[in-house]
Image (cartoon, rainbow, N blue to C red; front, side, top):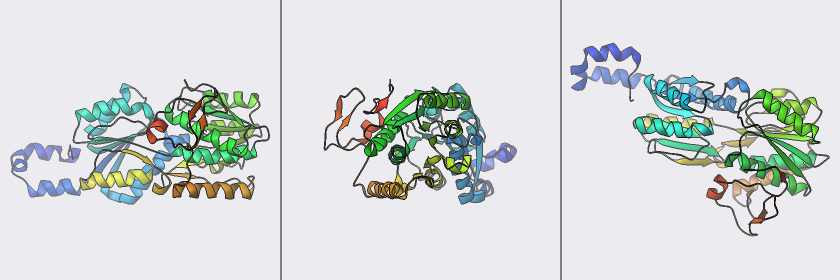
Length: 365
């Protein structure tokens, strides 16, 4: 570890000459100490959304490793220089590996990573890396597509709404996948997007959903950190598509038709193990169904069984790599062909997507 625990500080001061000569006793004490793991959340786990599911992954790691690790959490950390100070604080407390869960932490994490080459850094959802910094995410667009099929089947009007946080490639890609799924069963379906320009703001999220409902949307999907858009839909008797966690369970309403969900523990546990073993290496990771990083929640009993069967069949095709979302001809929402028939979009093009597919009402710019 870069730093020993606070309990050993005084001992190190007095035993410095022995330690320099390789004190067996001191080495054993260091090896027996739990490895400290730092976790930085953009919101509190009580949001029951994005940070909640990240914390479920952290809890899974705590249960898996037991007293071999000690987790230090930092919540509601802004995506600015405050995050650098938070990371430095975690390093001062002896953290060997640090996870940060929001897109705009990435530049700040890279800055800190360059200053601390003997600490491992893990950034969720971004693209920057370093010799001691990885980025990681999952192919959530696949679950977005499947949830779009359910939304398209259940919508009476064909007017779907989507509350989006920021127009990053991650969010744009999810909206496009959702729209393609809905239009695969209802070619005339449209998806109207309202941006909140915030990841976590319950009031803005609710207001955005209400504006979509006022405009005639009867299914509300979201890329936001709380359950507020779904609650707004439920209160109006409309349907909702959740995100991050099982919103049907959290809200107690079967009007939440399904929720694309994350399993962050599937990534965190192996990475912590590598840090413990000294085998950790930097990577750009994009996990999927085979890695158990993404999944669908149970589907509402309001959804017809034949629709559920069709969704499950498509999920299996995704696992088998015989079908994926951005295969074949794709037009943007101005009618311009962006991908020809028979082509398959590369990961690079998906990770930089900045345009909306046909059927989306709104601007990705």
